[in-house]
Image 1 (cartoon, one colour):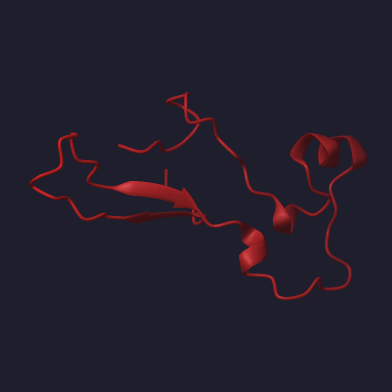
Image 2 (cartoon, one colour; image 1 turned 30 degrees about the vertical axis):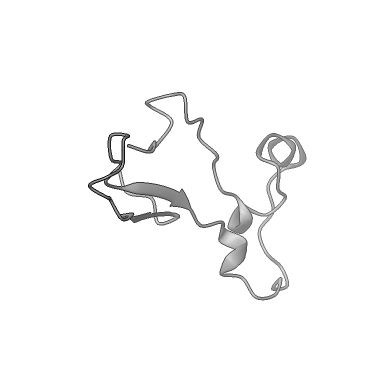
Length: 77
């Protein structure tokens, strides 16, 4: 499953590097990087759900999967 917040890049791999190379690395671009100002009348989460998610506005919500769980999202490697 592809999520639009995930980006990838291929770092330089040296032939003299003693560690096994990581060919592709992943990172998350938070949604607040694409919203220049807060528009009026944005939809809001109910209070309990907003506390669970860490934001009041669904437009600014970004899940933060654990790097330890395989089913939580992409991991480096």
